[in-house]
Length: 483
Image (cartoon, rainbow, N blue to C red; front, side):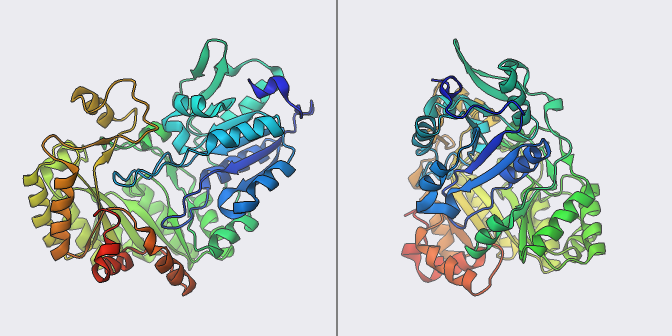
């Protein structure tokens, strides 16, 4: 039943709604991540004149349910950050508790529930059917959720809100989005000290976003599905203001969550030059595409405080890079590696083994090429998670690795024809045995204690090199669950 029909707490006619935003993310491996999307949504709702409260599962823990039942909101929004861990061996999912949570809210609070977040945006219809939620928002919620509140006041107009998912007599509708439904101006995130302090205390990462959207064509990636294919940069002063706020909150390190920070040279230059002028002490990390980087750009990044780079390289073989639709070559990867090392910036490469175009021969080429990189940390996972709306999804259907109509809430993975998971792991682990800079498989939960100790000692930023050392010293544990 739609909770609107049986609401114990109907919204006031003054249009000032009491909104409770819930961060339902329970994943703490390798560390808890601050709910940035929820913080931007909170800012937009506050600007619209609504009263906004938060409840975070990772902070409240065992007190979560009691605190939830103490609230008397007019509407609850639940952020679904991830569907699963995208790891073929573990296949841990993060949506199993959503149905019970929504059911409890309907039964005990009687208010409507709206689902959102990046995970929801990938599989909106499936999650609506699974949970029984009243509404959902695909993509950005800063405009859609205030518009929904207005529609709820009038009890009409759901079909005109871009990205809204709603129920009706015929089933579930998912409104389409066009470029005008994407907000070009993101408000400063609502970085509540009582929340950020807890994340910092637990060793979690605080983060910020300088742009949305992704024009890259990577065959497996959901960024274009969630945020659109056009890079939309925030105002430079707004970004710098957020850096300053993070520093004032006590963060020594922050991560920029853009799909790729170097979407353009102009974007990098504007942000970094402003950071240099402001002379902030906070260090930061980001995703970089290993292409189009110059010595001047890398020097500017270092001067602006960039401490860690995560290169989305995906493969060290040109044939596979082409099949993955990466639009760069191994020579680009090698050059980017040299530039980062030249400025003494810590970095690692992420690799997805076994995707389209992969063979035993291409793996051997990748192994050989990796030796030319000077032994950086290389994080490699076997198999490529299939999500709807991606080019990989279409390929998997064409190759009959996936049946049309498959519910992808249950993780499904692509492995190139001719490769089995056992063979892939045998080859990867065999090479890693002689090249310990390759960290193969999943993050091992046994490393949780190591993470805690390092954070207690004041170590900030990614811990790739520590995991590589742990894998070498304790190979049975350090294999990351891949053995």
